[in-house]
Amino acid sequence: MANKVGLTDAKIAGLKAPTAGQIELADGIVPGLRLRMGASGIKTYILRKRVQGKWLNVTIGRHGPSFTLAHARKKARDLLVDVEQGKSIARKAGAKRKGSKGVGTVAELYETYLAQQIEGKKRSAREFDRVFRKYIEPEIGDRLADSITRSDVSRFVEKIAFERGKETLTMARIVYRHLSTFYTWALTRLEHMPANPCRDAWRPKRNEPRDRVLSDRELAALWQSAVEDG
Image 1 (tube, rainbow, N blue to C red):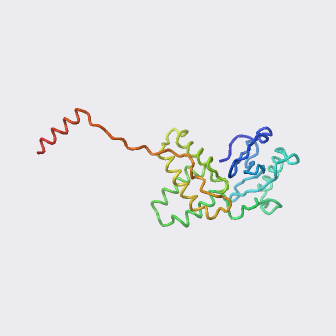
Image 2: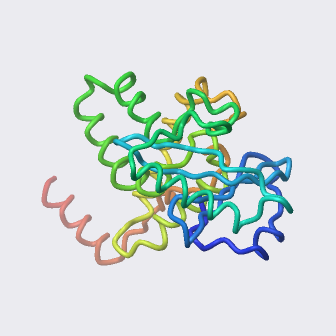
């Protein structure tokens, strides 16, 4: 998931490339501006904006000496002004992320999943949709579906399990299970995602049932009941 703290030059310089997948950091100054880095170590600025109900993902430029955070913020602000004025920015040179055609965000891909996989299963569909809308979409719905990593899933599930006052470990397991089911289906559509990001991610373990020993008083009551019943 994207880190919700502001970008700084020092933070960007100190970033370490992930061993697999991608990481994203969200800027706290310009809404929608993010820095993405993959295993190659290349750092790319993107702008993510919801336009007419759909997520628009625009590649702004590659981080380097000639294109710094200040340059990325200026360009992102200019693009946001274009969007507000109704101008199309998706067809500009370099606007689309290479290899992103057909991928879309988690939320966009989920709509296809909902229609194809659980339409007609009214009861299960309602519950799955409720969990997705309440927990999954607000947290990672605007992320590109092939950018979610195992560590993203682990942090997300941990947040539900331990940081939400009224939530339970049971709900964390349910969210994990639903997200894993979704990605099992989605893998055939995500060319650049090698495996289900939920695989080997952290989730709460089920409590093992324990043997219970009857107290002396309970044993006596059981014996008396057996005598009375013959």
